[in-house]
Image (cartoon, rainbow, N blue to C red; front, side, top):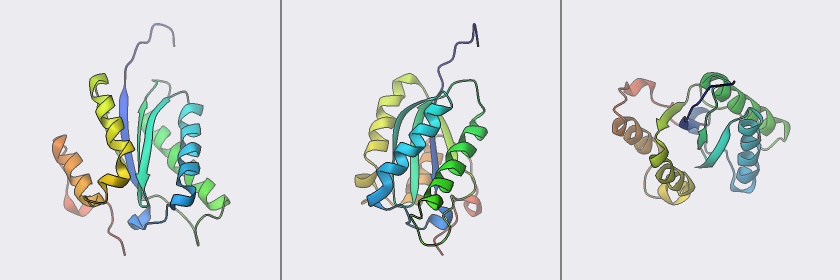
Length: 153
């Protein structure tokens, strides 16, 4: 798009259905590489990806050529199809409905990238739901507890 100038940095967070710990360390890096390919294939710039067994964080430079909801559908739909095609889990893998997406200034991006790269160590101390509430609270995003990611069943 000629004469279109943007600087949009987004952190996206989404969880495995019911927050079940299905993302194994043995194939997590391959999943992250697959998601990177989806993001880059849509013309966006992935800056960091990380997570643990039950959720994923991405931070990327968003191009104005696609809506955020369409990109998230591509990432979640494409990656769950890949996991199922590779038969990486028993049964059918799916991501929980919804996601979090938060914008950051360029000066905030290095801190967000460090945070994402430090997910494993972070989650030895802080459970995912506590982290999720903290993100929402720190960004002054109102939420209702009943709509927070479904609990592990």
